Length: 138
Image 1 (spheres, rainbow, N blue to C red):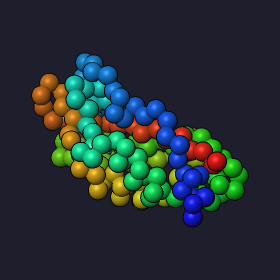
Image 2 (tube, one colour):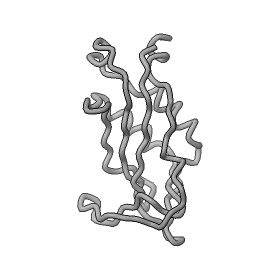
Image 3 (spheres, one colour):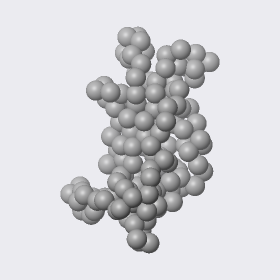
């Protein structure tokens, strides 16, 4: 069991909470039917903080057995949107070009977080976020 915890995650720099303040930039998301912002005055964040979020992700994500067997290391990419209502939508998870088998646990972790909704010009807006985690099979 200790081996499983050790091999899961070595965190790298994560742009989720380190976005610079910039002019609000959005694109229309047809699936959500609204504008989704990538760069905004106040990006969406979790109330528990990034360290709690990453700790919870590390405990809950199951690294694919085949990737372990092949000793694949690399980056885990988690792309998603935090809506104007603080809900998680449009979740996409991959390890480089390899999709993660266990996207349900990632969705569960992100959905159970309390999100502080992003703001652009003082208005709540849907925010597109990306978490990048380096996977080490130490």
